[in-house]
Figure 1 (cartoon, rainbow, N blue to C red):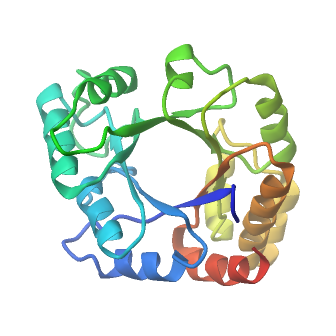
Figure 2: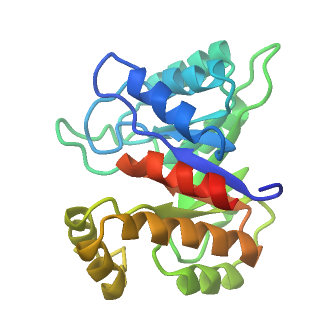
Length: 252
């Protein structure tokens, strides 16, 4: 997949045990170019994304730590940057973060200020941080276009992704979001979200056969690669990472 990167998102642990993370990395490594580690992404505490990104790198892969503005004040963010520099973690994805299951947002930082702070932070002997942001299928603000890379929201409609890509002029790598529908329950739950448009035919297919979600995601990745419209894919395989890896190993 030279020239087209597959960034695989892993499920970070909610317990002090990294066995499952290591297994995900081991299974997906033959097809993944890097691994993205979410940050308390479902509003529950998880092991630090910076620590897991370091674990990824110890296994010989590239780790990208996701950090959300929801849970941080400026001092906490600077702690994360310092920790990352100590570990040699150089790439970040900054996001706003969904509503937390417990507690409240700090509201001190935004994605934009996090990017600015990371740009202004350097440590002797360490490479500059590379920072990215996320976007919906809308106009991209100038400050996001000036990040090092951009992740596009998950879409189950290839034509929608390609139409959006034609409307934006960006000089940075852009990665399309692809999420596996792991089950009929997941498909119906996601279909209720206004920002996600899942074709009814796909939901019906997953109702009949859970592997249809894997098939659709893998086919979408291949079509996105062939379109040459994106620099790569941000893949969220959820619990079906074994099946996704097996299929992509055959077809990439």
